[in-house]
Length: 451
Ligand code: GDP
Image 1 (cartoon, rainbow, N blue to C red):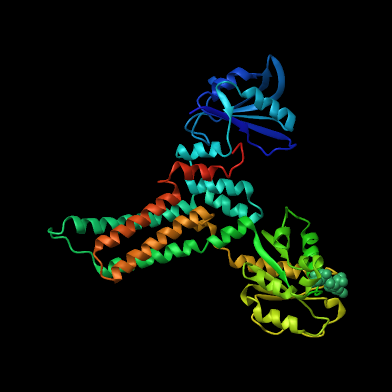
Image 2: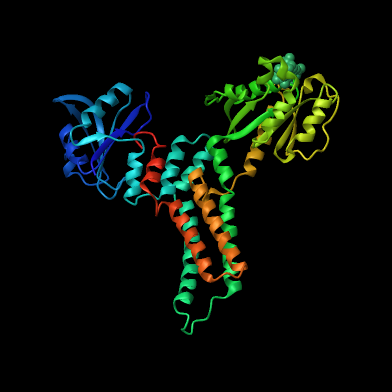
């Protein structure tokens, strides 16, 4: 494979930047452009050692740097790798990268280092995907989960499923291949209970998908309520409250204002349906209707009520449509005095605030954190982290269900075998042990250059 190079650290001004070179010409190229101040040139250095020296271009010193040599297969990619730690700064780093590039070293594509690590067996596909998630993880909990996945928790869990399937398949094969021998036939209830256990374990793993999605994309949170209860004020208070606006998501096409904020260790994609009535008087009348439509997709609803005024028909309408177990009741305008108390409707939580005076915001934050925590599953046991993995696992679960159905219908064990082979295949695709080039390419294009 040819030799590749890229800047491995984030772009922008930083104290130190790292340029990574990987491939069979990496060390020879380092000999050409690096002059150590003491000691050995790169080709004489052992793996895992570094040297201090100068990067040269046309005999001019560009920068002083620390150069580290990793020898195949003991490197991130499994190939010979050289890492040059130079002074940060976009201009200088780019200049050194250009110096590194030559006829035998080309610029790496997005994710190419990690792709090579995968192709050389240094990482499983689920671990490689976790590296991508780690790079883009927003929020402390997301980063923690991605780190655990990088350590192979999902792979181990899936391998356990695969082992069970292979055991089942081999039992069935022995019985089918040697019907005349004196081998005890496969016991129906034993087969059934093993399949049922496998099915329920797989479904347990599948339930971690929501948590993965929430960590990756943020908890999709909708602020709902009738006009004038203080939705926009709350929206702005939450944005300002944590002062950690990550991105502006253009929500204009969906007629909502969307903002990504951070609360505790969680990212929230916050939609304010109140944005609607500011632009269209007609819509103000159907503000509640509009809010209700958004509730269907929401992970969490912050239902805002004005406790300084009596409960109205609109409030009641909203109350009758809220997904209570996913709703935190936010009783606003407490600074104006409480006219009424919200009843026990089965809300996930109830908090009293004054969005205007910023009272009670900590309690709201605690309630949101508590709610987000309900989705949490111990990441040490593995987690379904993206849509690709979900689709593979879902296929495997359906195939095991088919096997169970075949068993219950009294079909020949051949039918069970075919379904179980399908399940095993889907799991091999999940872990990347049996996968097409197209899928590998699709996975790695999610990366940034230099990883
Ligand atoms: P929305 O229509 O639900 O988005 O409501 P707004 O956020 O636009 O607020 C409507 C009015 O209520 C504005 O005049 C706000 O200043 C006021 N308001 C919002 N929250 C509070 C609060 O906690 N206390 C008081 N006194 N006024 C508030």
